[in-house]
Length: 341
Image 1: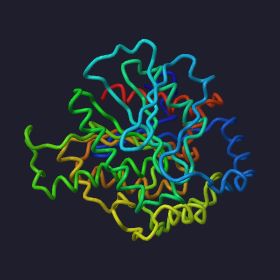
Image 2: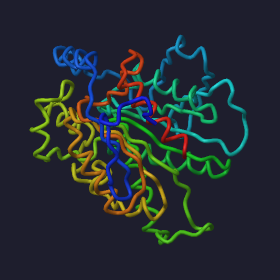
Image 3: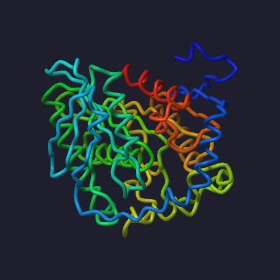
């Protein structure tokens, strides 16, 4: 995967059922970018969402879609944008990636999200990559949006079962949080229906894998390591992640597993054979909880591959459109992992 890199730049750690690639390097250009991000951090995080309730109609960047086919559909009143490589052949048994973009549970997919998902579709021509326009806070915080998204999850999985498709749910930051919470809540509901020992006849459909990038896994924000990491994070601060968590949780308890997947029954993922892959970054205040979640996956024998890049910032792979080496290599790692699913 990293054949052209010196061995000293990365190490493969034994994480039990989780294989962890641990990298320490940082290019000079990325260091400069992180310095600039730190300087303009207040402007980056100053957006005050002003959008309608429900699923937003998105405005895909047409210039970036010249090498792909884009189609829009609506399921459970939520808009879905399917990105397909021109070499993709229609038919049953398709691999699908449903992507939930981060944005503090309050912002629609950015141009960087579109660029990454388009590149993913091009590099994985056997796969349809779909961007989900989920209902967002502040109009639709979790008590409103989550049940809606769970209904969508059920509909998409039923459709996949009928078509014989293999489904991967993916997301970054707050989107990764939603991906984890939806899957774990659906598995919990199934277990409560005595489906915790599934058979071919009784098993509810579920994704084969999840890919979570810089996931937000504990909305209580009580991990003391958050403050220790804060001085190294150029983009986020403890105050910012507490504000965004509060905006999403509404009147739910922050410990609720529908908000904090670290409190969910992780064993259900192993019982259903759902792999969980992920990316964490050392200069990210969300990383301490992300690593705890990764360790919990290993504790319950959930299979997966994770990349931890110590000197990178939150969601560094989204700098892909700017040609940064780390973004390109991190993105390629994600593609290589997902191609195997």
